[in-house]
Length: 249
Length: 296
Image (tube, rainbow over all chains, first blue to last red; front, side, top):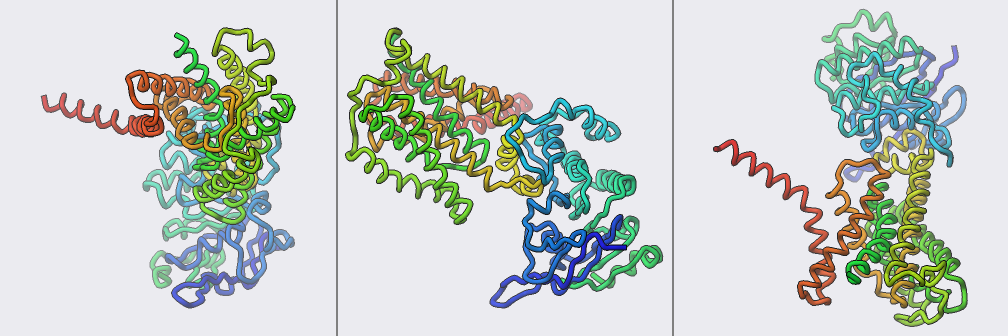
C-alpha cells in the first residue's frame, strides 16, 4: 500500500542559547490511509513542531514531505489546508468567537478553497449543520449562538466538527482534549474515535494522556528530543500497558 | 436650533469616517494610525482637484483611491516588512504629512470654486445645514449597504475571520495577508473620502486637519457600543452613526458651557476615555450596589 504522507529525514533547527538545536532530528515517518496514529512525548519532544511541519505553519530546515506522492515541502499552509486539517489544544484557537456556530461551520466547509466575492450560502446549509450537530447535546440547537458564548468543551467540539466537515485527507489532533475537564474530554475523545472510524479518516493524534494513547489508534509513536524512539503497530500496541510507556518519559 | 442641526449634520458626515475606522479597529482588530494622515490626504486631494476644475464626484473618487494607496502602504509595511501595526500606521501618517503638503503646495487652501458637492443635486436649496444631513444619510446608506453585502460574501467572511482569529483563518486556507490588505485599504479609502467631504463642507483643506481624527472616529464607535451592546454587525454600523451624533452633541454642550475651544482636543480625549471606561465603572458600581444590598 502506498503511504498517504511520507516524511523523509525531516530536520528543524532553531538557534537558541548561542547554539543550534534540532527540534526535529531526522524524522522518517510513513502514514498510510486510515492509519490512526497516536504520538506521545514529553514537553519539547517536537510533537507540535512535527504537526507544524506537516501543516506548513513552520517550514523544515531540511528534509521532504510528500502527500500522495506529491512533494508539498515548499507549499504554504493555505495550499496544504485543502488536504490537511488540524484541531488545536486551545479551544479558542480553532473558532471565530464573533461568529455563530453555523457561520463557523460554513467557513470551515470551504477549507482550502478560494474565497470568492459571492454571497455565502448560510441558509442553504442550515439543515446540513443541524444534522451534523443533532446528536451532540453540547451543540444541538446552538447553531445561532455566538462562539464566544460557548464553553471550552463546546468550542472544542465545534473545532473538531470544523476540522472534519469537509473530509480531510489527514486529520491532525494536537492534544485536543487536554484543556477540557475529564468528563468533557472523554466525551470528545469518544466522538473523535467514532467519527474517525465511521468516515475512515487518516489521523495523527498528539496526546500526553497514556490511557488515551493505549485505548485509541492503530499505531503508537513516541518522540524524544526530536527523534522517533518507538513505533508500534496495532498488535504491539495491544500488548502494551501504561507502565511500559513510563520509561520513555 | 440651528446649532443643533449643524451639530447633527457634522455627526452624520463624521460617521462615515468612523465606519471606515470600524473596519480596521473592530473587524480586523488593527489599531490603524494611518487615518490621521489619510483623512487630510482626502481633503487636500479633493480641494486641489475641485480648484483645478474637476467635478466634486471625481474629486471624491480620487480621494478614495488615494486613501486606498495610503492603506496599501501601511498594509505592506505591516504584512510584508513585519513592522508592528502601530508603527506602520505612524510611519505612513508621518510620510503623508509631506505628501499632503506636496499636493496642496502650502499648509491650507480655501475652496473657491462653486462645484462643491454640498451645492449640487438641489442640496443648496435645502435649509441651512440640512444639506450635510441629507448627503450624510445618502452616503452612509450606500456605504453601509455595500459593506453589509461585502461582509456577507465569502471574501467578507474571510476578512472577519482574519480579524477574529488569524491562526484559525490561516489553517482554513484563508490568505490572511490579502484580507488585511483589503480591510486596511478600504478603511483608509472611506476615511479619505470623508476628508474630501469635510473639506467641501468647511470650504477649505488644511494639512493639519487630521490631528485627533482617530479620537473622533473611535468615540463614535465606542459610544455606539456603550449605548447598544451585543447587536448584530449590520446594526452596529447604525450604532456608529448614532454614536457620532451623540459625540458631537456632547461636544456642543461642553462648548456651550463656556469651555475654551482651544481645549477641544483635550475634551475629546476625556470623552473617549470616559466612554471606554464606562463598562468598567458600570460593573464596579453594580458590584458595590450588590454588596451594599447583601450587607443590609
